[in-house]
Image (cartoon, rainbow, N blue to C red; front, side):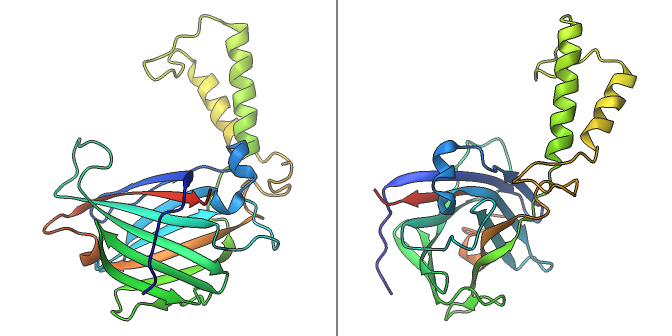
Length: 254
């Protein structure tokens, strides 16, 4: 088993919370000018879900927004899933509980490895060519890894959103007395105004690159690189813990 050391700088962060068999996700596409110059360290989305019999935890991290053939996995970036196991879901501080890290590195598109680590203990390890759609399995059979190029699974009508934002800004400009609630959202719009804004959100508007120019989904024609790890839940559920919180990070050598 090869030794592992963290690379220097934290480049990207993604967050998702999974409780028991529920599912959630977070998204971050093309937001940071710094990360746009290092797309293989730029996390788009993090997904986490249980399989149908609740025996395995699936972790997915999409990177490289608007991926191109010129990009590839390489040794410059480490990818880490941080899984925090808790006895129950509650108002605990973020990151609390017992942490298990799934740390993945790649020599190339066809050579990768992942460690499942709790504290300083390596609980499992997988290595090989992760580009096979079926993935590669650890010797114990408790860890499976896939990494490769896929269609971006995230859906967002960006142009419709921009149309609605423009309309809302115009409404604010014409009536500066718009009331905002505690979250900063307008609370005294007429029902007809709300309906018009919702219509704007769903409009089919001609997009501009890198968005699709023909479909409502901005990401319909775009690809990403995906790291998908399937874990036996006993690797991440400490003791009788039944809930886990998941976030992800990338680390770039300095």
